[in-house]
Image (cartoon, rainbow over all chains, first blue to last red; front, side):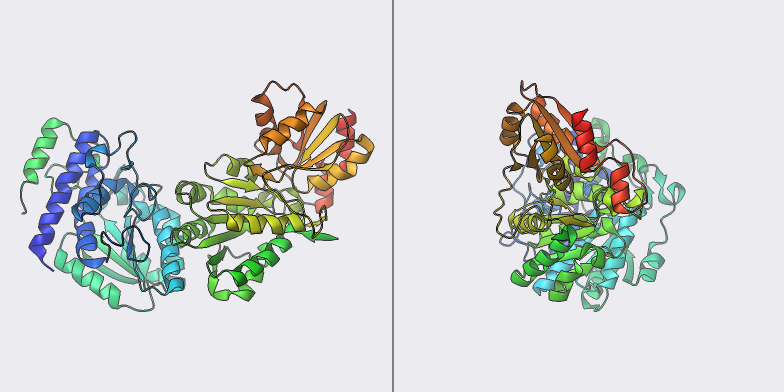
Length: 271
Length: 301
């Protein structure tokens, strides 16, 4: 694992996230920037997806349960050379790059998501299918901490634990913020670690921006047998863009020209 | 003979899972009631219980289907079409995944359990979903044929099944064509379009009314041409359904008619925008007017 290389990919992904949301003047930059390092790790280290197998299901699959972070998904697919579409078409009419991902429009989008909580549930179905097919492939689902307020997330975790789906990893992207503010002020979904443990999962906490920690967590998940692994990844919403960091106002708003310039300056080089 | 359509479903599903290793079955703690237990006996490794979590069951179904499986997911109609609606919408219908939602205990004929368990709106809900096909078989033979048919279709389907025994309309020799409505009896002036257990009631009423009886088991897609011809060749039409008069068969027939200049009036005989109640199935059906006697009364005015 070449950390510097990963950091460069993550930087390009972040620049594309800002560019897409700016061009469309619509989209969700905060959470997308926050999960960029996790997606970079998944697509450049962890998963076996490539140009030759992307059209198939005989490979590791990723479900972006927090579907509003589609800019991060499109940007990582682009960075990995798996996406032909022009990122400028994001959220425009006739585009494959829908506001929330559509699996039938884009190879490499493994599930249509957007309605929160459902992605993790569908990932359980995929993991069951992989087990039936004995293909040894793994499934990853990225779930927001705000998203964990949806009951179906816990129904899905209950099922994943009951069926001992050690071929799947549920990643909680814990940035502490949702549209209406701090998650604890809105309704209080935390702590996620203890909840997931109580459901029977193998739970690992890590810094969602530290590639060494992510590497340790995902390697440990791969080794763990008999239970699904939940990785509680602590992240900073808006990571990399100074004024967006830890500011829920940037959950779903697009930067204007001045803000855009500052963002691109912030993302000029690896820090 | 009389048989429950849910029993027919269970028997046919057991055949399908035995024949095809790609078929996977999901249930939500109702395996004995929905009869998916029959499939579990044959292929336990491809039967998954989601527990009392219908929403997650539909999500799991979507994930299995996204992996190439043909998935049958069952619960009571109230929970399958109702509670899990939005998962069916966003995770099954929007991505056009190959999930067959086979919902049992539909309608007032659930009986004693009462209104909370008597789905009066499921056909309406499911019919409005893009990519969804909707079927309502009327007896055991048709139920088996529908289950076999949807297994071969690629994409989301909803099959409405009942709890109670219903008399046979067909026999084992019947060859079904779900692209057409099925004229069971040719009469004069009055045509009774019926779905589900109201087909039997229509047949019972037809003699006295000298009415034409039509079984409409494919609600979506619906045989528009067949319905138009029948409307044109009769003076009055009725839509008979164990379903709210909004959104179900009456709506579907009216939608076909109002796209044309056909003037034949269409009247509903169904559940008049109300919930049901507890009671023996036959008592509930009688109280809510879903009997041959009431059909005769309404048609005769």
